[in-house]
Image (cartoon, rainbow, N blue to C red; front, side, top):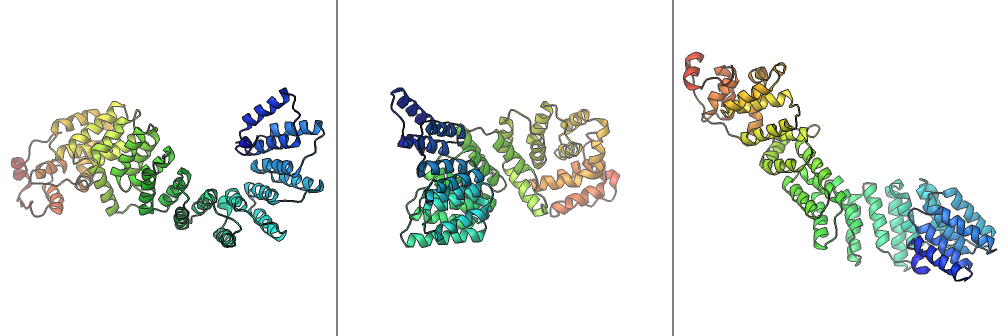
Length: 466
């Protein structure tokens, strides 16, 4: 049974146990112990089968040995039951068995899983004073069980203890220890320490795993360590380690705000790998289109420029979804006003889902139509807007400056022809239109009309809406 017990393969152990009974082979206490070990290491721990095995052993008048007691302790420990673990520990001593390293490991796991790191650390010291040398399993169990409850000082002491034991050749570090230590460092915010531990792990010849790289990706993205994120992603690809959907999503969100083109590439890789991209796509759209809290004018300009630069790819991603995403679509529409054809397409996309477009978006799109001399589109938009919205008033009174800023931030450059359309947006207020345009193109726009009426009638087309 030993090939199965520690792996938690309870079904295989049970099948062999039943085969022994059918063959009329009397199980020994060692056989029942293997059942207990399998129950302890199954996911989740199977207390029901363990209790049945104990009852059967008792019926056969078999006495538990230390290995059986320790297996039962580990069962309760993995189930987060410190009181039951301690009870079995005391019962084992009453039966004449002295505690071993395995016994203390079980107590440490039970205490840590119950959120009592002080008890777990105290047990570690008790083990040492009783003359037992902690193994690498002891330290790994402590790290896994206590996790984020440990402090930076606690982690430092554990590392020193392990280093000292390695120097004394009392133990050898392994993959599980590094995984547990890296996980703990990431969870308590010691990301740089985790990255250094990763380097040490590789130097010792311990290979990367999906779990370790995933932990480090989570830590490096939360700490905004872009070079480390890129290096870890490269390790995934170089070593052909499968990237999970959750890690892909973390990378997509991280690069959405920094390198949208890389985020789009990751979405494509997810799709090729057969991973559902809907949640990651929505997260990408929300990230690239939602202004962060406290965004400065410069940050806003950079964000809008990135949106405009990748507008067609982002629009294609939007269309790939089977559900409408109103807020991101409106945001991209506003960032794409310089590309009036795309802005118009996005507006039609929203309309096709019968979604209500906000008044401000309507008014800015209307201003863009006028600025770009899209008279028929402006007229159609006005027909589709409820009269209570008052988009025309918004355009003439409040939204021209905002729309021009959006256009300019997206990369649009005004020219002489823009003056006439701006004039219309400004409600035929020549001075306001001239002042607006001269702020952005003083070298090319220098007309100085003497009267508003004559100049406007000769230089501008008929108003598109009156």
